[in-house]
Length: 279
Image 1 (cartoon, one colour):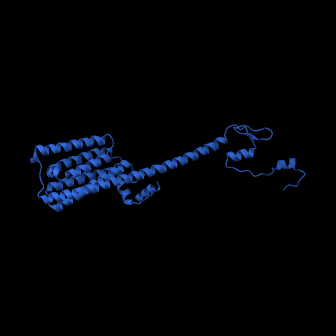
Image 2 (image 1 turned 30 degrees about the horizontal axis):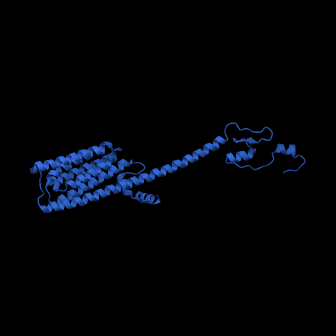
Image 3 (image 1 turned 90 degrees about the horizontal axis):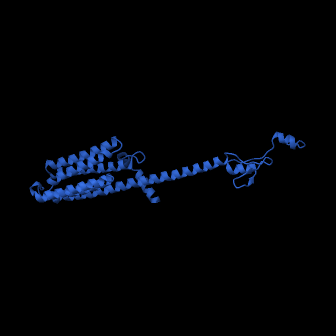
């Protein structure tokens, strides 16, 4: 547990994480994870756009990258501007699925790089959506992939191939590495955020337990000095709940944070010690 707290303390020092994803004390865990997914989707779109530009791919490929970047970036901005992102999650994953389905036809179908991004899409859906929406969207995604494979098999002419085998090799290799890195980053960020949330909850539980113990102790001490106390009319001893008699100062000392120091008041001095010179 100590090692876990050290990891969390180290993660808290990353100011960029708090700035981009939100502070753990003021931002819900689901919102921070959603923002992480949006940022990774944004970076993925930027990198694929750069690859398409450097490789000299057709303008339609650049359009898909720009749209994916815009959707992920817009969702991130909205999640930061407005707290609570439940309404953004389903439109985001639906829009990205639509873009991937369109890219399927322009990137040589199952032989292209779109399958890797579909795998990344499934991972993101599992992470950012809760039950039953994640299973529902994954089912829709699986049905979409099955439909794409069926169309590719029945209507091969609908699939547009790469310009050259070299372009295909570069795109597939780059997309594979990019998706592996994105999945790794997603898993790492989600685990780190959950660890921070777990450590924060443990700290709150410890503080709550301490506050409860302090309150119970204060209640016990408060109850001990309230109500009727059985006291002897002659010697002033007090009877406790067990039937035992105690001197007044002994009883109060045990049940309150006070101590007694003995002396002689002027009245007792005149009554009992008139023959003594007490100063």
